[in-house]
Image (cartoon, rainbow, N blue to C red; front, top):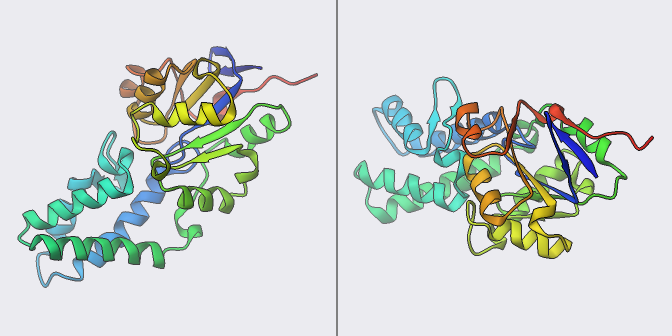
Length: 253
């Protein structure tokens, strides 16, 4: 079916979406999560906590003062395990023995997950619900492809009450290679019996766009409001749109 992405029109047989920064407000989610992780880590320090907190933020690509995620930084594009390893390395550089650094990091991430409720973390991106309603019943499969774990992605979409719209949710823990490797798109296409050239991939990072191009996706759509600015996305995407509201699904009538 023909769908408009800003001024670009494409005959799409499937729509594949990134999760964080595309379906879900990335800045709110990861700022809240990183603040809680940092709180748990800082409990192991006796002094110099404020400077340590800012340095930790810089290590993972997070501005603690403005609560913003750096374009292309680890929090924006890395898997959970990759972010864990960055924090472990940071702590070891600060003088923590490696084993202690790993124990503190893993326990802090675990406690943050345990203490934060989904309603504190999850906000839908603008235009999400209206777009899904416009696509409902149009016989075009939707997939969510994320570097996040499948379980967490499933829980997020269920919390937003949108999981039923998606034919497939594919997590980073279900593939051998995470983004920007094309494996995720190729796996999703195989499961949904589609060719990459038939699908549109919609994401908020350069990593998303690189994956789409490597996989041979028919159209790579960059959406603003997530983890990359317009100039970064424009260099890698086929088209850049301001938000999901810029996707127009013509009426059947």
